[in-house]
Image 1 (cartoon, helix red, strand yellow):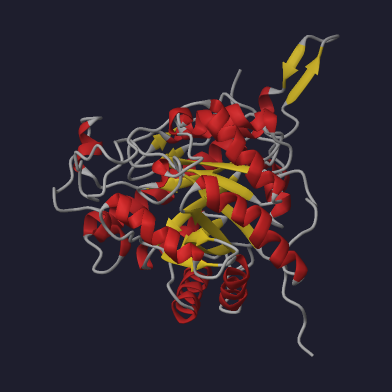
Image 2 (cartoon, one colour):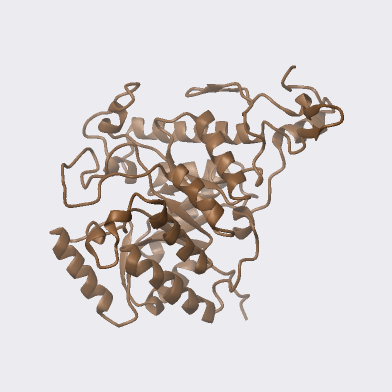
Length: 416
């Protein structure tokens, strides 16, 4: 008899009123509240009621568009976003267990700034922070910053499949260095660097602050951070991957990768590719989750989800397509699919609800009980940190370990 499989991990991707372009026009969508804290708090609290591992919050540095290479000038779809990190920080005190994973565009932001923002989120949430690292080759995004340019034809299609232009490979190499800088900065304070001794007047031990000293092709960062080491030590790093080059980023740099396989065979091939890259990067002994990515339209009544999707498509004026597979069906049918894909080596799934009003509750109140009944999902939160929920150990501080190994406690430390 084969050993039982580990329970699935589940996350939801939150974006506006939902991932379908016409989601904001659905009954219950509350479009006038899309830019309020209440909208986001309600969505994250619903996800937490469903015992999900984490939510991701979408973000970008330009307006949403149906054209992956630039603006589309449409006015019939949601345009505009709040800052994902700030939304996560606002929601964090209202929640107690669920992980909060905002998106950050590494291509145009500085790793020093992101490191302290996510470290702060980890403190505000008491150890439930993560980040989804994203790259961008959109010329209109680059134009906001004026520091680099990209060819007009280079867009999402180039980021999602072969052949990989040199510039795209370079973007993902840059993202890998970006994550390395962020991780070094998180470690630049040892866990016990803060003394806080009122009697002696010593707040910190300067020997336990360390320079990151990263000198690479894309970044030159000295450090240390201005924020003490986060409660998790290393908040969870995640990335979306469609093909070989982003698989390498997941394997080299991430704790969780999301893949957009459309069937079990594609999932099996993608998992094998990530694991091969993980071995090549010397991380074969580290836990790296590979999640399947699915957009979902759910209804308990057979056929009702397909009808609702058709109605939404009619409102949008075109059929909904996505980089990920779009599933329409019942929670039980979705549970069948997830358990089948798990056999391909996936350890969890990130679901994109077509509409928050209908499909997020269908996940938390329909899919979750179905998986629980099959012994495939938790019945209660078993940890208080995101790393704990994902079964990831709290990493040792690289600089403290190095000092202990060499016996040179002051080597590389910050001078007074």
